[in-house]
Image 1: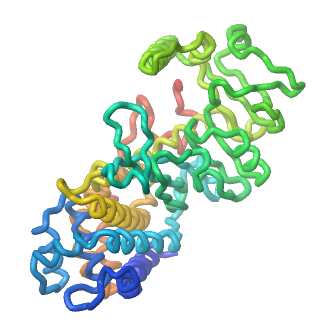
Image 2: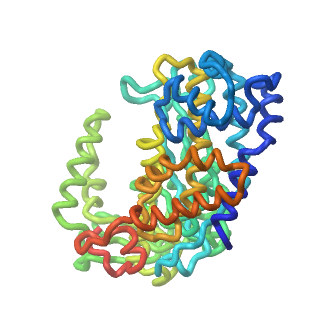
Image 3: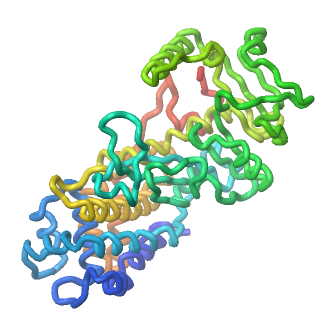
Length: 443
């Protein structure tokens, strides 16, 4: 499969004339005297990809490069469209996941046995308080925004495919998100943090013959295969080995059979964890329990992978791989400034700009899947920075498939030369551990 050709064709389709009809249906473009839906979207998305804190002058300059003969006032009026502009970008974004672009699979040792390795996580973005009815925030600390949205992302670590980006209210439960409760193919590992811990969800995945890997949530009832509920603190206190593994039945219903993998952590690590737990509990006006503090001397994982399939080191490395989604969010939030809007913008404008930026980072991700995914030791941040320098030329070439492919291949060469992470003798990198889990040293 020529992923460069596939992505080039997908970009043409995503940014094609169907946008004109959507713009008319949303009443954001009524008469095509200044803009079409396509040129309006390109002006805004391309500008924000290159300069996330763009001024009116920046949007006007992009419009000129797109061949639009318009005034700066005309640009400003489009942003004042309010709800129609929000709906236009929301619907444009909805079209993007349908493309389901899949990069050339990474060939690292740990990922080879699987057709996909799915990791899920969310990031929360504050919104103007006026949007609290539409996107109620999480509440909590003083100063927290009354309005917030949660961007849920399910990501295939092997092929780079964004399986399901979902925008939800900030108050929504992670464990009930569409990225957590959907079906998964047999044999596919799914990795989430503790916010998604739910024994009933694990049971459903097990019934689908998918694999889950998670930390054990403190307070979860744990039974042995005889139905006896052990005192875990007492149990681990009696262990002399640094690695303990056994089959358990988690949850009050005690029907799901899975592996518990317990790894003793160095005393310094345990002490830091305990101090952090005490500090966190104190902020909430309570004390950390002795049981919880005792268990922090161990890293506890649960998986429905049987026996030594996968090995304990593979389980730990795959769970650590969950942090790669933070490296996906990093360029979205720091480079693309997904969280930031224009100072003084109205609430509808802020939401429209968020959807425009999110569409931009999805398109950006397609390009990076095409140009960087075959490199196991890729740096998405470096690659995104290189793409920002090339994006306007790419968008100008949308009507010329050959030219667009040429620009993508040029970007691919730049990333191959300058967009890699480096190997480390101490604290091996993600790419090194994926290729050889036995390099794991400590937890």
